Image 1 (tube, rainbow, N blue to C red):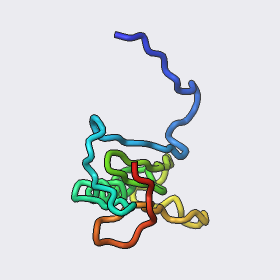
Image 2 (cartoon, one colour):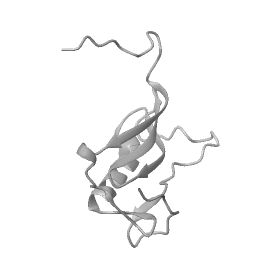
Image 3 (cartoon, helix red, strand yellow):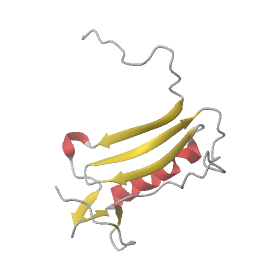
Length: 119
């Protein structure tokens, strides 16, 4: 076993703040949809990821979400940790912050989305 050392700051409160996360499929498997004509089209699994991501703050105290994007084999998103916020309550009320955005992908046949770079 490796002797691992934490990279966390000793007295930092990790329950507050915004975190940029990337979630990848195992071995880069294309599971969430395809890029068609320069646009990401979600399949059923991609739609499930979208629904679960959007509902995350409804099921977890102190969690809110911001902009995110789902790609064929990964997704990027911003999670906002807000210790003390009640489950289902938005931490955006009165802050002037815009609601989260679903960037660059939609179910095929859904709304028009901006083009994304094909790999």
